[in-house]
Image (cartoon, rainbow, N blue to C red; front, top):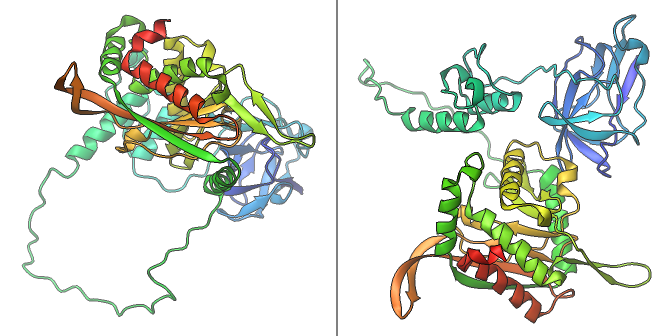
Length: 437
């Protein structure tokens, strides 16, 4: 009998929630078969088995929070079989998270070969067979989650491959037409439905208790710490973003950007990078140490993008964004957004950020006073872009207008620097040609 203990997934965390088991007692597993999925404060991680044999007992229930090092499953070793002789208990320090087959997979023990995904899945929406359809595993998972039959999706990718956009478009169309048919009236003119007696009321039936764990727990701790540590100051300004909208339209029509998603967020990102170069203190960090406090000025930009995901708020960042071309930055933003939505953001993608952008405009908001991401000194909020009356050369004209706001650590930067930085961001949105400087 061999016992598998919850390993350290290399994030410096001490606990994780066991989201789901992919095996049951009596199942046969091989080394590297995925046996469970755990959620830390930073990411979802699939746990591969370090042993081969027969599952004995599941020592932890789904939904439980488990300390690193605690036993979670027992496996009765098989007498023979590939990898059986190499099975061993993981030691922890050498383990790390790597991308395997499009998802986060724990490696560092077992055969080290390709991780097999052997899952006992929970009941899903009925989806017809998609055998013969060309689609990558993440796309198939997305289709399952949305209840989309891949066999009914019209592919648009190379070699007739179904893309993520194909699945989303099909799901949206299905949602539009799902309820278009009118059901027939029942043959029975009147029915009597028995009403069961009311159940005894809870102590407070109007209050629902939601446990705080995972991403929500980490976010709460980080935001509370930031709000009570860094003295925040927030500023904002309205911007005529008409030329930004025209620039985005031209980029979308350019052959160089034909296969890349372009949005106003791309111009905001370039504007922030340009403004940081002119006011470097914005990209700094206040650091308390034994020898006294210091300010670290970073001569690089790991650009964070706040992303609302099904798991909660994540802030992955684009490493060395200052070195990227416009096209490469667009690709990085698209990849970051897609990865976050699919729940595949890795811990490494969320570490080391230097300044963050939060796009509250996608929720219809005009401005806000966001809380600074820990370890940084500034966060920029992009508001909704709307057509509004605007005075141009003494005349009122309809223009695309947005509000750019931000919060800053007043220990690191003063009001003149804050104002200069945000004015620079606004200047680029008003005249994107400044990016050519």
